[in-house]
Image 1 (spheres, one colour):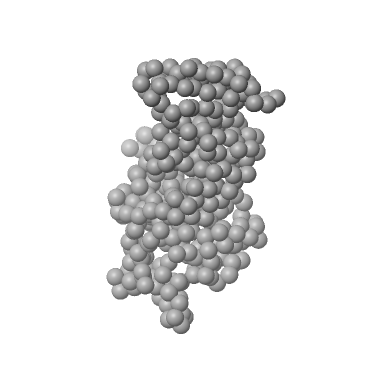
Image 2: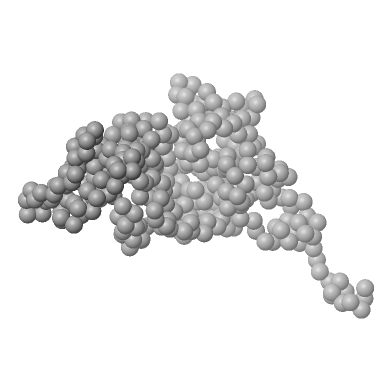
Amino acid sequence: MASIRKRGPYQWEARVRKKGRPLTSRTFETRAEAERWAKEIESEMDRGVYVSRKAAESTTLREALERYIEDYLPRLAHYEANIYRVRRFQRLALADKFMAAIQGKDIADYIKEREAEGVGGNAIRLELAFLSRLFNVAIRDWGMTSLVNPVSQVSRPKIPKGRERRLEEGEEERLMAVVSPEMRNIIGLALETAMRRAEISNLRWSRIDLERRTATLYKTKNGETRTTPLSPVALEILGRLKAESDGREDRIFTQSPSAITQAMRRACRNAGLADLNFHDLRHEATSRLFENTDLDLMEIRSITGHKTLQMLARYSHLRMDRLAGRLAGARRGRPHNPKVSSSNLDPATN
C-alpha cells in the first residue's frame, strides 16, 4: 500500500509497503511525481518484477563519478583525458541529480548546451561515450540493476567529416625551420611512422631494436601493444639520438603528449600554417605510405595500428595528380607527367 506525505514546501515523500518486502520510499518536488512513482513501484511488486532502486536513488552522479575514479579509471590507458572528463561532469548542475533521476531529456539538453558552446560533434560523442560507460558500470558492477542508461535513449551528434588536411609544398620545410631540435625529431618520426603523439612521447630505448628495425609501442590508443617497422629515415633519426644519449635515460623524448600539442600549435602559428595540427601528420604519413610504397592495405594497417580498414581509409587522402600518374603507368613514389601532343588527341591521326 502506498502513502504520500508532505515533508516541506517542495518535498513530498512517497512510501510503498508490501508484505514480504522492505519499506520503499522516495522524495519528490511535487505530489503528482510522488503518486506516479508509487503506482509504478506497486505495479512492479504486483507483477513480481520489482528491483530495488535504493542504490540508484541515493547516489548522485557526482558521487558515482568519484567512485568511478577509484574503481574503474586506473584500468584505462588514457587516465589524464578521462579524469578531465570526470571533473568536468562533476562541475555540472546535472551532477547533483540522483542516478535514477537522470533521463534521456537531461542528456539531450546537455548535447544542446555543448553544441551552443561550439563543441564539435565528435568531441560530444566521446563525452557521451564516457557517461554511457559510467552508467553501464553502475548497472553491471555496482548493483544498480534498476537503472536505465539515459545515453542510450538519445540520438547522438553525427560524426563529422574526417579532416583532409595534408602538408602542401614547402610547408614541411617551413614547419621544421621554427621548431626545437627535439620537436624536429618528433615531427620527423611522426611523418615516417604514422605514430600518434602519445606513442611517440612514450617511446623507450628498451623497446627500440635498431638491428631488427622495429619499435614496440605500449599504451596505444586501442590499448594494445603494437610492433611497427622503422623506415630508413626513422632509423637515421633514432640512430643519431641514440649516439647523442648518455645511456642512462630510457625515455627518448622529454615532452608529454600535451606538450607536443602546444609546441605544434606555436610552430604552426610562427610558420604561418593555417588549420594544421599534430594529428594531421598521421594523416600525412598514412597517405604517403599509400602513395610512395607498394605496401598493401593489411601491411599499412599493421604499421598505423588502425583497427578497421574503414578507419584506415579515413586517414588516407591521396593526391589526384598522383592517382592520375598511376593511371598513366607511373609506379608508386614516381609521379608520371606524360607529354601530350596534339597528334595524340586528334582522332584523324590514329
